Length: 130
Length: 167
Image 1 (cartoon, helix red, strand yellow):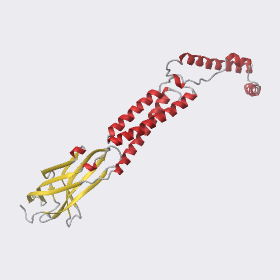
Image 2 (tube, helix red, strand yellow; image 1 turned 45 degrees about the vertical axis):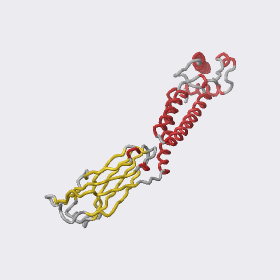
Image 3 (cartoon, one colour; image 1 turned 180 degrees about the vertical axis):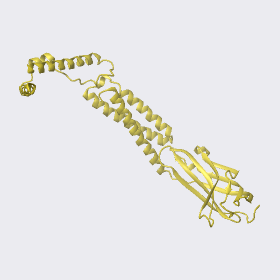
Image 4 (cartoon, chains in turn purple, orange; image 1 turned 135 degrees about the vertical axis):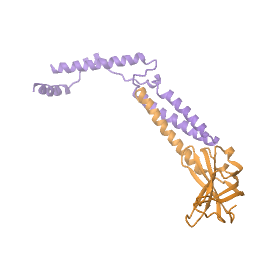
């Protein structure tokens, strides 16, 4: 009985994940503000942010100092921040080229998790009987 | 970095950190500037020297102030505050500083100037020690940067003397 319960839970969870994944696949063409970026995309986004801001900061300081204008430095850097925001903050499609490939729920049913289940079920059932 | 708000937060915090680093570098660049200011102060006329009813001496004088402070300005300078003080010693105070005139220089273009003026602020002693007193005129300046440390310096010009009697 308890084994059945767990498998049902598992199935429910997987179908939930599956629907979210399907949803994200349909939405992947456009921007989406609510859905998460994939792992590789997050890494790339962070690196890209640091590189763009760093390059703009160096350029801003060099140009500002050589022109003797503090305002020029700030304007160039502000431009860099704007560009970075535009590049990093929206969930662009090119940050989502490495989607996680979840197994189909049917596949999971065919190959159920082998051994840890009886142990946990025994523990759980004993605790329930108490 | 997985959601919109996390990325916005990351960009904001990192860009402010880099901005702070830029400002720090800008304020350090001020140390590369070695200024060579010069000033010329002259007492054109002692208008009067009188004793106030309360016993303190007061003097009115006309000053000729010319200075070239252009080298104080760097790309990180917001403005320069200058003031002329009369400095002298009495038995009561080892150092008296009386501000006679001040001004704010907003830019390098205005940093080379010559003006002739009566003392803007009253030159009053604590007591009646001004007759025949030797004093210095000092041009003080405060360089106020856009970011970083304020630089303070002065030029002291010695050898002025007030008249021996009330006039």
